[in-house]
Every structure is written in structure tokens, then in C-alpha cells.
Image (cartoon, rainbow over all chains, first blue to last red; front, side, top):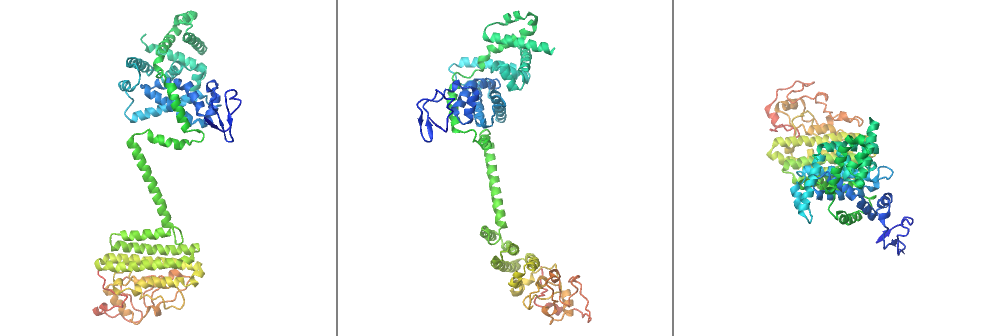
Length: 213
Length: 385
């Protein structure tokens, strides 16, 4: 692979092997191990155009974002597409992102929310979101029976959550489905961790009152 | 209350962490806080219910790994996010995210708007061009094309008159911008348009006298207004006057009225009859711009028989315009436009054709019908619309 320009030697210390110097480029046969890098480093490289660094960020946060999106949709395939769309939009707008401002995870969720809003608008124009029956037809899974059960459970949780207040629903999705800590949830929701804990307590109590356990 | 809520929420969060790690169950953590049992149990049970269904919100197995490679390739296609223009990169998305019909209509509208704006901009520049400009030839070509596309002779004649007016305006602009070397060519085109317009009026007159009269009036306006304007311009540009431009222009403007057959004059406008006489522009030894007054005479050839009879009686046939017209000073061009022969009524109050001006030196004889049949060549009274 060819990498144009200078490479930060400190960051890649011990990770670059068999470097061949040329007058205009460096030949790198082994890329740095992005998995050991901090988010801030990955973001910095991604802002300089290093797609592999951003790919590592995708691997770290794709499932978190997917769960958030899927908690707001009926169709798993749509949720997958939108998850990719979130990261693609983030990649395109990464030059505007400042690490000292909003935390990266909060930035991702902000974009995810916008992607969802755009999706709802499109769905509204095109006649609505796909039904569960359509999803069963299009969803690829080796075990259709298992898929059907998962879909039914998914519908059940969604229908329950939709009866909650918007902030209750959000805190539950972020804390228990996306798996964020109270601090991270506070960054996404713009609240303090203490406020998130109180909100979570109330949201869970409200949810319990809806359940027939 | 708030402090208690904070404490209780903190305890709940700790309990949730213990349960999530598998180190405790709902009952075991509630046993640790018996005083909060009633407050802790419902949210903990709800949390357990959610945890048990968390897996239904997982993506398909392998989705992240498979999509990672695809997405990185997409990132590479747009290698530098810093250089990407957000506005332009959203434009394809705008079309992509909408229905086909909306896409097509938006595209068609955009194309139509661009074409319209482009055409209007170009047309504006073409129409604004004057001789010597790069786009001027396009203007002339466009004019000829429009003439060819005109539906009839009347339309063509109207266009010719309009183009003659344009040439006059262009000459004025040329003088104002100092491109006087281009004036001659423009004057030739002016002459060209006038000739064709006069011929057109004659053709129209054979079939429709009323329309011919309208065209003739328009024709007259084409000549009258610019001459007045030119007087002012030449007043401020003496070098142009010394080149004889004004005389040339006046002679050219008068030419159609002097040289055209009498039929041309028959279709002149009937709305501005005056008692002025035939036009002559070349007899004055020095340029005095009296021509503006004489233009009115050419357009006022139609006089009703009763008026003609009276005029004939008061104005001897021997009277010529050159001998009766008062010389007008160059610094007063507006006065020249209404200077009549001496035998005519005062310029400030031109008499309508139906009212016979009273003679000052001899009594008016009774109008003789046969005199109305033989008026002066330029005062032909026989136009019947």
C-alpha cells in the first residue's frame, strides 16, 4: 500500500516494517495496528484522510449505533444500511469535527439521529416503512424460524418502548440497548451523569408499569 | 427529596452494574438495600427484562466485519474528507433520496431554469451591444432572422422601423462613448432599415390603408424623436457637427419623404394635421437643425377637404417652405420642432383641420370644391381610411 506524505514515527514506532524510502512516497507493507490506538488518534488520522483509521472507529461503534437505529426501526436491513450511512456521513463531515468540542460518540449519535429523521421523511414520502412480513421475506438469515422469533420479540420491545416518553425511551435505548455508560449517555443527551441516573430510574419504573411480568 | 433521589438513583445504578456483571441477582441486591426495596425492585425488573431482550437488537452475525471492508472502500473513494465540498456532495444525495418523478421534475426544472437564465443573460448582452462590440454581429443576425420569421409585411415593416430606432439609439451611444468612427456604418444600416420600412409601408397601403397609416405614424416617430436628441448631443460634441454628420442624418431621414411616390404620403397619420408646408432640408447654407420642424409636415399631409380649401385660400401656392420658414438658432432645438411657415397659425396653437384660420390681410373666400382636388403634392387630402 502506498502512503503519501510523512508518517508520524512516534505513533507508528515498532509497527512499520520493511520501509522502503522513495523520493516521493513511503512504501508500507504493514499498516499500523489501529486496534491499539486511542479514539483521538484514530480521529486525527481519519481527518487526514486515512480511511483505515476510520474503519477501526467503525468497528468499535457500529454495533452501538446499529442498536440505537434498530430500536427506532422495524427492519433490520434498513438499520444496517442506515448504520453504514451514519458512518459515511461522519466520514464526509469529519473535517468539521473538533475533538475538544462534542465527544466523538455524541457526534456519531447526533448524525445517527439526523439519518433516522431523513429516513422517516423518505419513508413518509414513499408510503411508509416496510412491514414485518416484508422484512421476513427480504431479511437474509440461515434460520427463518429464528428470524421470525427475533422479529416478534423486537416488535414487542419496540411497541413497549414507544409508549414511553421520548427522553425515557432515549435513555433506556442508550443505556440498555446501546450499552453506553451514564457519562456517555449524558454526553449524547446533553445531561450530567447524575441527571442521567435519575432519568434512568424514572424511565425504568415507567417501563416496569407497562410490563406484564 | 432531590438528595434522596440522587442517592436512590446511584444505588440503582450500582445494582444494575452488579446484575449486568453477573455478580448478583435482583433479590440479592435488594437484600443489600431493604429500606429501598419498593423503589428498587420495579426498575430492576424492567432492566432485567430489557437485558434479556438485548440480543434481538444485535445486527446479523458478521455484519460489522463484512460491512467494514465495503465501507472502507467507500471512504477511499472519497479519500480526503477535508477537501470534500459538503454542498456539492449533498446534491447527488438530494436526487438519490427522492422518487423518480421528483428527481426528473427537479432535473427538468433545473435545466429549464439554467437554459432560461443563460438565454436571457446572453440575449440581454446581445441587445445591449453597440457597433464595435463582439456581440453586435449576433444582434444584427438576430434582427434579420426575426424579420424573416415575421408573419406578414406589416410585421416586417414594424420590425424595420424598430431597428431603425435602434440604430439611432446606437448612434447616440456611439457618440457618447466616443466611438464616432462607427457612426457611419450605423448610419448606413439606419438608411437600409428606413428604405425597407418605407417600401413595406407602401406594400401594406395597397391592402390595408389603416394599418399603413399606423405604420407611417410610427415611422414618423422614428425620425422625429432622435433628431431632437441628436441636436442635444451634437451641441455637446461640436467635432461631430463639423464633420457634417447631422446634415447627413437629416438628409437621410428626410429622404423617404422626398423621394417616395405620392402614395406613400397618402397613408400618413391623420392625427396631427398642421398647416406647415413641404419638407426641404438641403437649402439652408448653414446647418441650423430646422429639419425637426419639417418632419411634422411630412406626416400631416392629410387634411380634410374643408380645411384644405381654407388653407389654400389663405396660403398662396407660390409660397415655399424655405422662404417662409423662420431660421432657428442652434441653441434652441425645441423651438425648431414647431416653427411653422409665416402664413400658418402660431406654433403654440396649431389649428385643427376643421377650423379654418382667419387670414390677417385678406378675407377668406368661399371654399371651392375643385381646389380640394388639386392640393399641393405634399398636402394630399384624398386619404380615405
